[in-house]
Length: 148
Image (cartoon, rainbow, N blue to C red; front, side, top):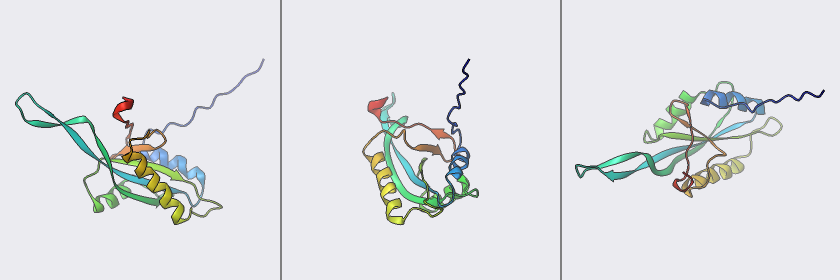
């Protein structure tokens, strides 16, 4: 009789889960972050006024930045720094860029990845390759209207 074990992929249920899992990549790992502003679509109400639609809008990158990913990386620190730039954002789109031989990726490579993340957002491409969180660190899934 053969017994196979199945190890499910770890689930990311909070920002802290992402940070913890990413620490396994070793020293030099960077957290890539794009702040997302949602420009809400509006609809006309029965009274003739316009109201924001909660579940539809245009996603716009407000800021791109990398952070060293260490055991001390905390969402509240990233949120505080982001709020110094703008408080008009709703989501953090994140990706992890592992270091090489304990050293962080060069800045030009980091910039290329950040630029690509922002382009992916603005062109409406699939965002499944990124972990996206609310200000409170709860994961969310965003998708283009054509994918809904």
